[in-house]
Length: 184
Image (cartoon, rainbow, N blue to C red; front, side):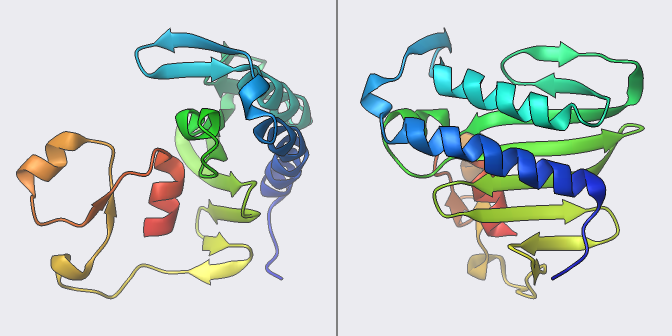
């Protein structure tokens, strides 16, 4: 098993703990309380519950926090931030589609140092650390050696890209973080 940083270790443990509540709520999706933030933009009690668990776990490091539901919590440490999306793919989650994830990044001095995408349904953890490469469940992943764009897979939720590059093999499954992880 590859050695990981203390920050990544905290991120993984936070996701594992939060995923228990998320999986439980996914099994009861028809009973969830949902509110609308904007057009096609929803927030569930599950989002808020998962966010709270993540923040409580990540608070072991005294970093500032930027999270989708609560916004910003600036602490004394203004150089280091946790960036949290408690449920990326909320619409999938709400419709009982098992394609959503927890997404966390750690930023230091305006640079992304560590990123993690956790799919609680498939129990897959995608992560990358600066200067240490990218992994899925401790297995190294690398950039494809494919040279022909027709043979490549792209992920985007931007409909304008298809108009500019109509031959691209674009995917948009409703969970941008997992789309990008699978491209990686």
